[in-house]
Length: 360
Ligand code: DNO
Image (cartoon, rainbow, N blue to C red; front, side):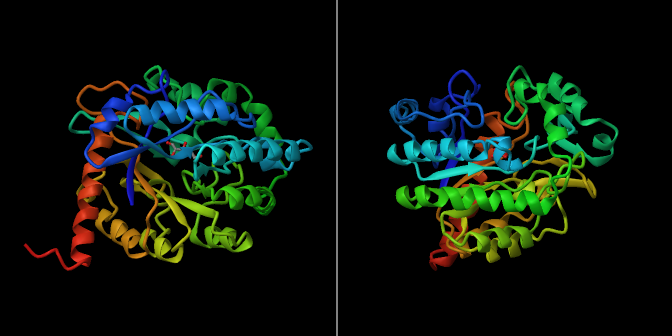
């Protein structure tokens, strides 16, 4: 396992590479070319510049999150093959620059969805939260306006103003697209990109839908163990894998995290590990990483990853906003640094127990 932190790039992130370098045990970043629109080709020069910037700071790029998938591909629109060719070209360029992990999602229109970005907790920290009844009281076009005041001046992934401007048209385009159609479009996409992934040994790692159910009536498919396993089987290539995100997959309390990790053995290429605190079904907030602060048993999650031989990058996921920090909600430095240390501590203990060196 390699501990990493997500970094949005200079000019987009309030956190610097120098700060990340000082978190003990963090050796890599998960990053992206944040200005790229879905469907645009990433050139070798742009990728090389990013690699150099990260390496000059004493870190490495452990993977890309995300290379976004154009809606035409998700919709099987008339231009899907053109956008797949662009995606393949980007993968080719990433492969040539030594990058072997790409996280992406296949959620229509919206990426991850929350109804609050700064819910205040008892200790004064703020967290992201989701309440289904709030979502149901809003129309999709208004969600962005509802939450944007709490973005601390940042542009959040999946909530880019340009994307929001097109929202009505995008929602309209999905009328008549059901989950099976979306699933088949994902399979088509994966089959088309597997040859370039094989050539450069690029692990594709799909992110589960967040939350793990349909929002605003849009189809969502990466929501449960059955669908994840079905996808792995339909495109049975080790380069077709999963980003196991506990905080997304775990939003549905029927999803058993440790059992699913065990079933996905060998196909989890990237792990996002965080905790949730539930106030009811479909009503939760993002807690600190520590087990006692939320409802997940983080020790068991880490143990399941360890026992299945997980050896990819892991990152602490959304953190609380603490100590007066002003950053992109979920992506401040302080609480994610605490999360990285805690997860590294669990991992050290589990490794030592398993190598018989655990006794004091
Ligand atoms: C939110 C993230 C997602 C994730 C994408 C992957 O904080 O977990 O935006 O990066 O869904 O493509």
